[in-house]
Image (cartoon, rainbow, N blue to C red; front, top):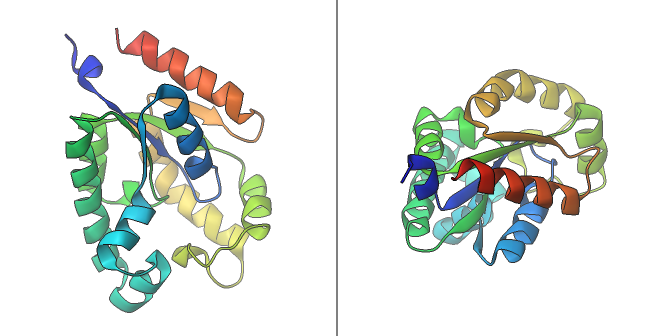
Length: 182
């Protein structure tokens, strides 16, 4: 049995607005696995919305809690396979990258910044504390510059969400996961 076949978690990684939460829910349903969202779990553990926790405690405390939540999710996944929708910045902590590398099959969902901007502008960004204020496109570009190499390093599969339907992405993910888990 390979290490790959022991992985019982598919983690969706990528920038905010790329569609991780929506796709993770649909993928989990298709596989009959549990769906978990790191930001939702952080809110549950913190007892307040992510944006409020981030604003009152700061990014360092948020990232620490994010690491604890991710670790707990991955431990639980050894008993119950799951699909995890991660926060866009989960890869900035080396500890999180190590956990994802060791225990998850990672799918990098990507889209051009212009597409992300359009999606973020049509949705609420209050739950995305690092995307507040002006020059959203500049902020996305700065995040991409830091995070893209980290996503690339972790990804077992990369999909461009700007050109594929969720059905097509789910099909690609399940096909590749099955092939690589042999």
